[in-house]
Length: 314
Image (tube, rainbow, N blue to C red; front, side):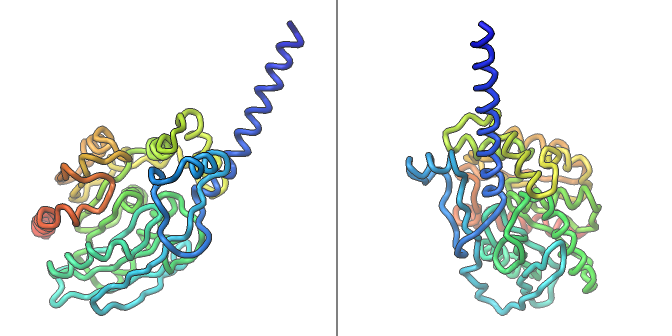
């Protein structure tokens, strides 16, 4: 009996150690980019063999690039934050204000050009930003919006230093989470926030991505977060936009796709309920975790235009 117990204990310890070693690699690859600069495929599109390799060795994430440039005249701006950031500044005639635009996980400012185009038509300057590890910005890592919050503040301070009074912040997914953390940490004096599909908590969004690989998220999601945090110098279990919302008093337009498989209805409702300032929730029935403009161009423009017009009075 004692021998059996010793074997069980030894086996359990070995499994625990091996699993943690695997998670160290996973955590690193989940938060670091490498290889040539191009957009990678989504987890659901991976083949069975790719999924098996990913389960044991982690996701190989190529660095998101900026393959598409704005069709309008733009200026490339470099800002020093926790890393050196590359931004594109675009000007509108007789501008009513400036919208600073932040992309999502494994993306870049190129993917936000369509939003910029619409804001320019509405008479607003735009500043498109590459977070650290993406596009033309320095670094090779991401903290899924945690350290990126400092970069949001840097960009806000830059635009404010130019004398701009009507500053709006737009972010999608990770970008929205970074904006919410920045407002929680720094209490920015923006005119309003436009948040597209922010996740409720870091644990929930990691669990969804683990589940997408056909793996039970417990205890993998927690271990992945722990090691990713250790490797990047932050505590991801405190990265919770649902809680950040409690400190947000700015006018906020929250957007969500009703077919979203990464951010749940419950997460969106929790964020909306916790927002403390004037708020509006708009949903898009046929959209998932994606850009809403291709399917709902007119509705998106109408919602955003109304929000901008209404918030100018604050």
